[in-house]
Image 1 (cartoon, rainbow, N blue to C red):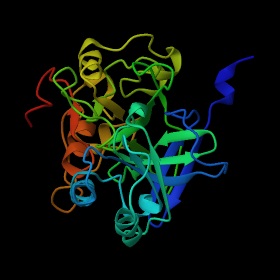
Image 2: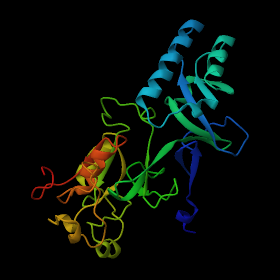
Image 3: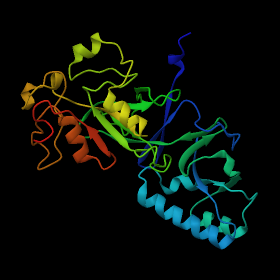
Image 4: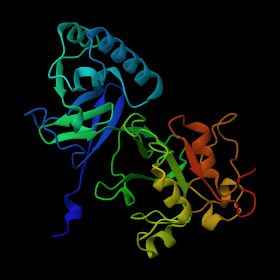
Length: 300
């Protein structure tokens, strides 16, 4: 049996925000008997005194709000505390309750779950990927890492907001701590559709080319390098056909030109790396976009 047909994603909407959850749990720890996905926030406790714990939690909460565009107060409904203590005193429960927390769960630090927002159910704990609409039409497709191999990607099959635009899924900046070995951990990167990405088609801005070629079995060296450094590839951006020099909207045949966020929104974003440039200029949730400079697309 082809197991690919069994893979699925679930879209969860919290107020005006939408999130996608992949099929398999990311941490095999059972916190509830309910099969329904519920928002969860994980904190790590290293202090021993109640006063220090409260201060650390307050600092972490403030930091989450400032640094992460995936986390929001709704994830505080259930709080998971990683601690070497078996329990926390009433003052900690009172603090968390003031944030809207209904359930507090304490587990040993040996579980090694990074801080940040998640979803949980009876199946385990799942990463929370926030969906953003591609309102500038900068992307030709959105991607998400395979849960079997972080170097293999697949098309993101998820939509939200009742829009015809693609939705792009981004990970929490809190779930992927950066280190000397992983300096780009958690960085959201878009790549021009001239680069190969393992598991995904390369279209080169041409529908016929995409249809005639199989999905890429390897990633381009530049893409592999950023993945090795911990980056997350969130999608492929539009390019003029085969990286050519189409300059005006009328030259684009297979895909519609990416919108330019500058000016009145209808200025031409020239060059073959137009999708990467338009996305990076428009979206605060996008950290880096890879382009190519065969002639002049990176300096116009």
